[in-house]
Image 1 (cartoon, helix red, strand yellow):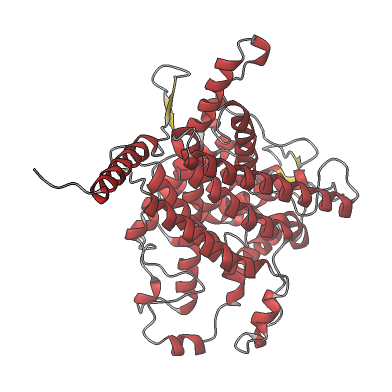
Image 2 (image 1 turned 30 degrees about the vertical axis):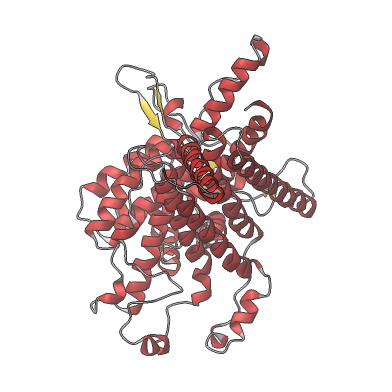
Length: 497
């Protein structure tokens, strides 16, 4: 007979507790699932993935259904913000502009009196709101195109240039809806997309031509217009085309590795790729779709961190095409896109291939913290001045700090990541310590999002003397809509799950 000691008994009890804990963790691992929506017409069923938050929303709705049987308390099946396919009825979409936004030109009179200053004014919102985070266009070249329009009309442009200009002006006209009204000339209808179908139809002439950097830029401009109008299904379809062309043009390879690219060419290719990457990550998360661009297929350096140059000292001594500080914002957005990809791969892959261990989640959480610690420097209003005084950049002129709306974008991205990482735990591990921790993190992040957005709007309305929510720094990024939508369901889940 074997001897027995109290240590043996304690060891057995610890082993049983570990086994019980492991079983509980396995059963409570985050397992959000996507949703196959019923068809509107025959053969048109659509899928929205769990990364969009649809599983979480449907879980909260089920709790409402169980607790509130009265018809007045019923909650309708919510659409994910940007699911424009669910809004289509099969008929062509109507004009997207109001009469006070554009001037309709008859087909028999396509020309309209305008000068360069008019065109610069009409496009100002694009350059203020969208070019800083997504600088995929060469601004001086586009300004040259605008000058040509003022002299010879838009009919003098190539197909690619015409599409790019129409995208820019369409985005600008849409953005002005959130700003205090101003008096000025109306944009001619032939300089904008009058319908969403009008924009999508421009894909055909681009596809009929060999792929070039300029044609890819035009496609990204169309996609950005669709994103700005919250037409995310359409933007995602265009994004698939953009990704394949980007691969064909070799944009996923760092241009500094190849001698045939000049400093300016390499800079433009890098800017274009990271804009494509950031938009792709946003669309994949918003619609819950698999990633188009895998990180292990990419070796492009961030704009502020070149790793492939043979002689970094020699590169730094070459005259740069612009102030490197101008690309800090898109670089941080690209890094955040990487974090979104980590979360989607961790939480929302096929259930057969998900890894939901605590170590993996802790790694993603550390990446979020690292990104935020670095991003806070960029939010400092004196950060640009500090960088300028470093010596190397002092001769390139002053660079203003970030716009308030772009600062808010970075802040919201941080809290959005917290929700994305922890939300699956809420629907998968009820009545556990993991659930309680994840719930409190999501609630805290949601409150911060609403508080920061509200503060931004209140400050903007006070400065503009507005009472209808229109501000000089509008919230153009559609991700704000998703965050507020998710915050609403987080609040409801606190009471119903």
